[in-house]
Image (cartoon, rainbow, N blue to C red; front, side):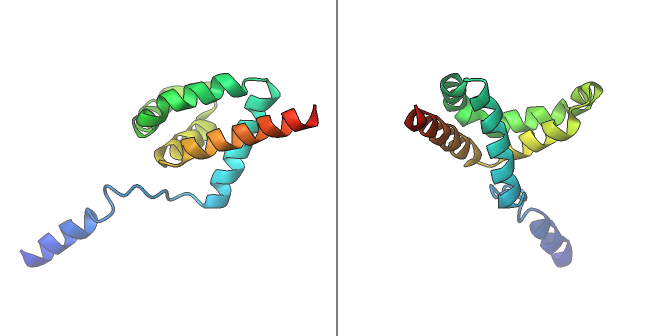
Length: 112
């Protein structure tokens, strides 16, 4: 009985962990890629506003994206969707994306 309780508690040890299992370099590269696409289209400000609005729901949205991944795989973007959903699981990813977008916007202003 004691070993069963130990196995159960060990299984739950990381069940509610807020740490991401993705490498920090991969996260940074993905954030830079998404930010560059947004910036090249001139959607910095609307994107920052949208990210600020969804910040409290980023984990819930990531789980919804994981849940609908079989449906989205019909369109052939399953790998990108999974990557974005994994990014949203991290609490700091939204803040980092906003800071990357704002830095690109400031760099663009300085070059004018």
